[in-house]
Image 1 (cartoon, one colour):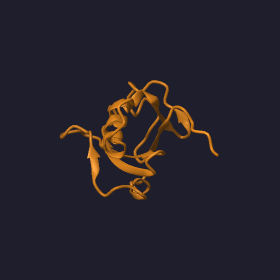
Image 2: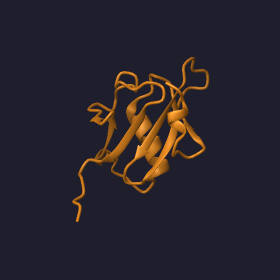
Image 3: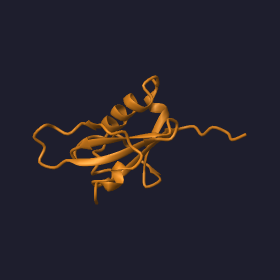
Image 4: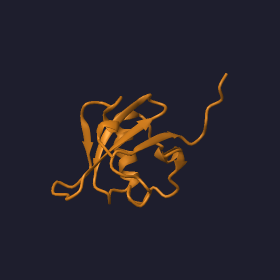
Length: 108
């Protein structure tokens, strides 16, 4: 998948989680529904989903302490085990991960 999809609506600077000499580097788009913002995160396929979530939340919602109250979704489905690697969770280069509050807020 091209990296073009990861460039739309994201901040210009990427968060790098991939090891310096990683043979394969993927660029993910991580969007936070509550922040109405997104970041690019460079990872190796073995990077844990939890690490991506922590790094993105530090940029997008730095005041949030309870990360467990937020879920990560891939293709609209919650990633049930965030300790999995992004590859094991089903992501590929150019995927978008959505971070959102576990509890939906009522619309009034």
